[in-house]
Length: 284
Image 1 (cartoon, one colour):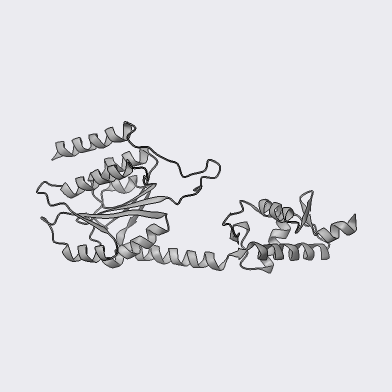
Image 2 (cartoon, one colour):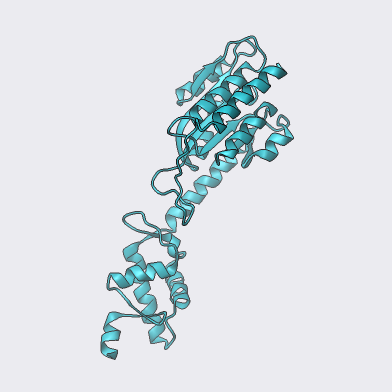
């Protein structure tokens, strides 16, 4: 079987190095963020190595959706060795694709998983992220190959059943039993993010009020002071990143938000200080 595994990885290496895989970039060179599309995420689960209950499988989907768009979710098992028919039915109910690799050869399910993974990578809609549910050391070489193509690999494994070298290789590693905690953290973060958002018009309102306050107090109206006053007046305003625009555009910094307000005629800028249009006209 050692010879079989070596030959299998040689095939993978040939596919990856031959140009058979065409990679598209979803990142802009300027800020490293996705330009239009979400990151494509593929899930591969070695069910014999990591038994996956329906509850954990549902939690996994929530976790993965926080990373990008789920393109495929496959589970692999050889029913000749173990009986996971109950798990099969439960996982298929929530959309997992079940692959029963009924072969008498050792590691047949693992090898089928690796083969399918490389075939998926070779397609036009390649994975940006691969979620591997296994602690099996057989996947070490496969993970290395994926990473040479800038594919991020996130690994989930059982405690006490994971190869140290595989764990250290992962771009991100978690124990499968920690999924409920991870999902709870994601839900809390999303709830906090929603509560802290203000729309662009609200932000303009607090910008104007902050400028008025500073001028009334005889203080300078530099960016840092106005930003601080806006935070004091509105707890939902947590800097320019908390401003939600109608087109979904994000402001990179406070200066960019100010430029938008100036362009809309809401405020005026002079020497990195802010003024209201009426005050500027009176001063002139």
